[in-house]
Amino acid sequence: NHGRVINFGAGPSALPEPVLEEAAKGLFNFQNTGIGIAEISHRSKEFTSFIANLESLIRKQLDVPPTHEILFTQGGGSNQFSAVVLNMLARWRLLHPEAPAEEAVMDYVVTGSWSKKAMEEAKRLGGGRVNAVADSRQFSQTGKAFDNIPSHDAYKFSRDPALIYYCENETVDGVEFSHEESSPAAFPFQLLGQSTEKQLLPLVADYSSSFMCRPIPRLADHAIVYAGAQKNIGPAGLTVIIARKDCLVDVDAAARLGAAPVPIMLSWKTLSDSKSLYNTPSVLSIYMTGLVLERIDSLGGLKYFEDLNRRKASKVYAAVKEGQDRGVFQKKVKDGSESWMNVVFEVFGEGAEKRFLDGAEKKGMKGLKGHRSVGGIRVSLYNAITEEQVDTLVTYMNDFVAEET
Ligand code: PMP
Image (cartoon, rainbow, N blue to C red; front, side, top):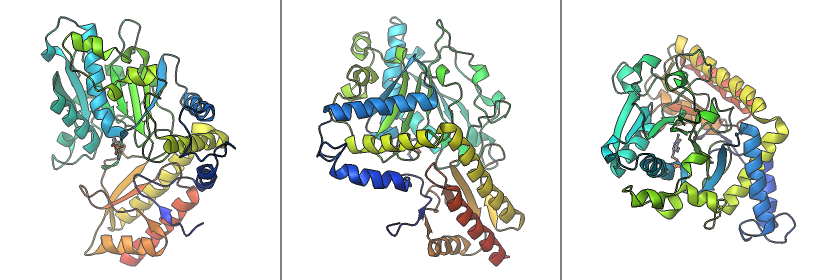
């Protein structure tokens, strides 16, 4: 296995080995062109048909409706923090040509450090009012921790906002909206109603760390769903945007009416008009993402991964619970708000966290250290992590608990 260890890192993160093998070949010779994938023109017919196939695989897996386009760009999730604000404010301006700018309200649901960062960018860019619809820290014991998804009565949505923003899975804090409709930790879609021809919801979701790990609930009601590739589907350098067509707005027309000018590469319409080839895209990253998508398809699609990821997460949470009952581990996130992708917990005892990490490394497991802002342990369980690898970790966790007690 080329001396590889089990990599539970949060991103960039493990990729499936068969994909790496295939990509290594493509680096030398992409689809018998005699040219490597990092060397071939992005306008070659081989590459343009590859990217078209990637698009159709994403469309198929997520059941993306014809009302939505799939766009590819660079700059990661962070670039979309800015793009979301600029494009959605331009859209609002075109819908309300006469209204004063302060009437453009941007609703942010804050459930962790990534949605908080996105909201801060909205404040930085200005051009409207920013409203924290709900801030989950208020509902934590300390008033400071992002450790829960707020219950539905906590949300204070604005009337006719320019955008409504949430982050589906908070990678650092390990909290995620539930996909069980009856769960109090499900996203409160019912408070927003449904997109209709007359009322198109300006709903924006950051799916960076949960894209393609299971289906997206109510995808059709979203204006925008975006994700950086570097967790579940590929290397860093590619961002996928699923955009409802009414969001592909003429940003220059909006600017003439007083909206902020939008850098050409941040305009979703630019990406759409150029079939995501306005400039040179991240060719290698797109290629590897395409290989991952082909693999997802051949294994049985998102249903397969949803079942697999549910089993993986429940095994790790069960091991945390076992350790918690014996005073060794402490789960950080409240019941019902736990992420399937990023399991965060603490290890109790003098020097115990270091012992846990060192011991894991000796057994060939890396990437388990929690984000520097929250500490503790974080186990990332993206698609490429196998159930067998999870079993290895769980055995280690159980042994560790036995040794510490
Ligand atoms: N959103 C989420 C949920 C993330 O996990 C990350 C990165 N880990 C980002 C946004 C920022 O993405 P990028 O580093 O690609 O800019």
